[in-house]
Length: 138
Image (cartoon, rainbow, N blue to C red; front, top):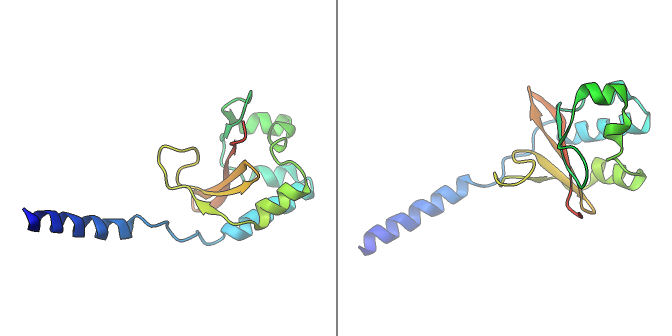
């Protein structure tokens, strides 16, 4: 019995090593900086190409996603989540952490937390794109 318990423990420790966060995708930092630059330049068409549509949203009194057609018609349906220069600085340069919990919003993406406003970036179709927004303050 003792051998079985030790074998199970050793197996779980081996599995835990594989559960570590994956390496950051190549282009994550560049995509974040390009995203911020597009917002600052008010390049709404370019910004639209940097988003995985429909974009999931989790915030109080907000629809659960923003469709590309709605964004193209009225970019404020999307840019309202981007806040001010401090938020843009955060998106472009603060630490990104992997969202590895399958039960949480943004699973499989990298999240940048800007005072409870969380911005998610992930790889979709071989490109790093903005994949979602969540406000955890509400």
